[in-house]
Length: 185
Image (tube, rainbow, N blue to C red; front, side, top):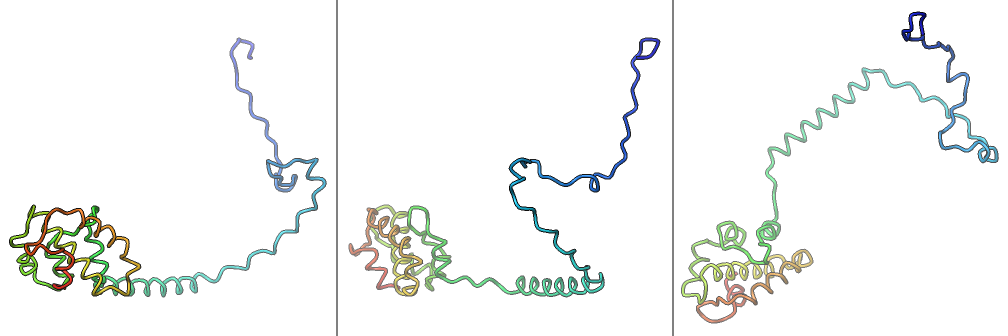
């Protein structure tokens, strides 16, 4: 306090020392008593070798970047070729059925008009009959064209077969949807 009763700020003391020279670096979670029984730490490793000159590093980076750009252009120009099996698997609905649409007809290699013609005079709900026919066609296609990859689609086929067994709609001929699809595919 000053003579007038006002508070005055005191200058901070200045201590000049190099912390790295005057003390050893000790982790915060060490116990000095327990540490006395431990063997000393190994000596520091040799210093890292000098970095290559900037010109060499730049040349390597430029070459890698050029290769990366070429690969990127190649990937953009080449269309992704997806297996028909993958396309068919991706079209299955959550309940196990498929929709009778142009995409399914393309995978099956059939005309959508011809596939829909088989639904004439089907018994039951027309929308359910169309899904049942599509599901049976998909299963028949998997059996005929993707038998070597059965381990990839067997679980989804089981789900589709369960859905198909619960469908009330029937083909006009009265036979099973899957039996009719096996003849068609």
